[in-house]
Image (cartoon, rainbow, N blue to C red; front, side):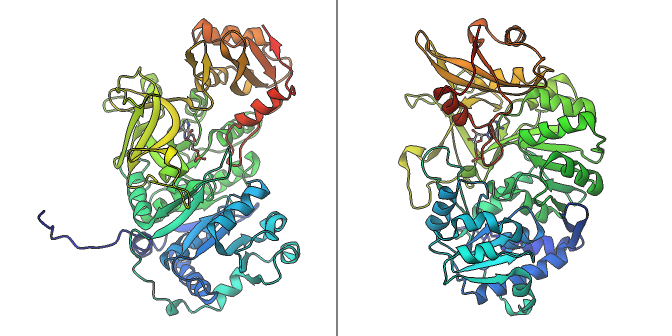
Length: 547
Ligand code: AMP
């Protein structure tokens, strides 16, 4: 093969850092503190990144070592996003909402030597600290007392305050190595619905390529005119790539900290005027409900990124109609860095039209750099005809090829990642997810999409949330059970809702079993947790009405 004349230049996190620092030093990071916000420029943050790198090196962190973060979305978390990988160490974002056993498992499995922890989260970490075998040092952000953590942690563990570590460091003392692009930059464990969570390890190269992928016209490109509010936590699949993409673009980053309830979020949005933001559908549904009886100012928002779970069309329409805000849908998973597809409409479709909404409410088209196919149970690759339904498999430079310390061959098929998501694909490449494979309802040999039923139900004015699960049925094997949260108990009855659904889906798909609940249980990253509902049904905890 003929060799190219191109330079052998590593695609790494340092490149993203240097670019943002050199070009966008005046852009800012804003961290919400409940009433006021803290502001720092990219230039300020860049210097602190160097100090943190020096400090971590002083604590004995070497290339390849894992540094955990147990933090909200804050300026300091962003500093760790750069300082850790840029010195060749590996950033391990810890999901603060995991069950204690799972949290201890991922810290030990990841082998974290240092954990950077927000002072307000120290009590949560204290619950598992005695079991954290590998942690030698806790770096505490903030000045709140953390005695509970100090007492629970192993005797040998050291404690240092983040600000002291930075104050003592000479930023000029660190000579960042040019880290190899294939080296690990970060790791994140899947939310683990069954069994132990599985670790995905991102390389510098995959991180760089994912950032560029987001920044293409097929993605959700940010610019230096944007103010980006990532509500999705930085421990949930790298906040969907938002921190690095914003830094590369020079977009201001508005960090909500721990203030993720509708009221403070609405206040932060009104105060700091983001132009764009990203979060799971439940956050937007909460904000929408809040806006019904509170004054809100969303006038700065032009585009909302929504994903992590199927986005109900009714939610998109509500934001469009009430606030004129375009909500786009993205699909991906921890294993795909995570953004793999975005629901931008095709060429020629006018924005704001029903036709555009039809396209936007599909799951999306793959980003350049991601290849995708659908495969049936027998392993046959299915056509993109908008009809055939199979499991999505994908491959590309920011898609994982294995799990950390666990090759998990059943998760891969000839170099393709098996996603467990069931979908059809239109001839022009729009994916339409009908379910997770474990959520699909198999009724008499036919499949019913729980996602579709939920989407329609949530368009009913009396319905706040709806989740549909499969329950055993003597005749049909499985039938749908609709679990509905109504605005008031006096709202639509089960037969009203069934009739309403009947205007959208075939009769045989209509649930005959209904239950009214006060809230749909949520996972650690705010998605509907259907496994809890299935367990509640199995334990006879749900009051089921049969029509
Ligand atoms: P996680 O790794 O926790 O982010 O979960 C990834 C899973 O979330 C995917 O495999 C999908 O099942 C689901 N998911 C993410 N985005 C979407 C979307 N836009 N529509 C439907 N499901 C989604």
